[in-house]
Length: 159
Image (cartoon, rainbow, N blue to C red):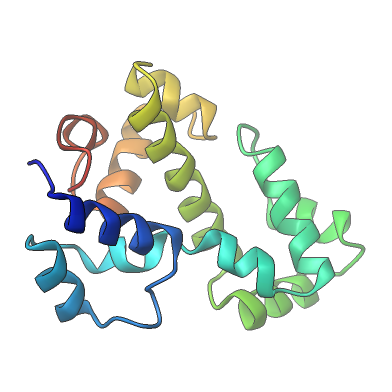
């Protein structure tokens, strides 16, 4: 599906997180003129979290971005931040509004979307590049957040 200029600009603002708090779900669907999964509304506000979080959480987010391809555990990030796993998990959830795992998955999906839009890499390779060693699991997670498969997303550019 091809978006007109207004829809494309609006979808970019949505993806950047600019409109997440300013527009409700119905408005987003009306402005885009298409059906939108609720996951699309919330998935891409990663940079906003990084800007608004405490230095400890910003550092953790940067670590996640730099090591996205690797297996990242809650314990590993907590140690990196010199916090107990329990304290880090609660601090992260309080400041970001998402659990560590949800945030990491959304970060990985955001990066996968970037690769799908800017490269011709196979989906299996993109899955590995964003930290999903199992392409089938990657596709399931991608569908959960984007309401379409990675291949469908690449073909349509927006589900």
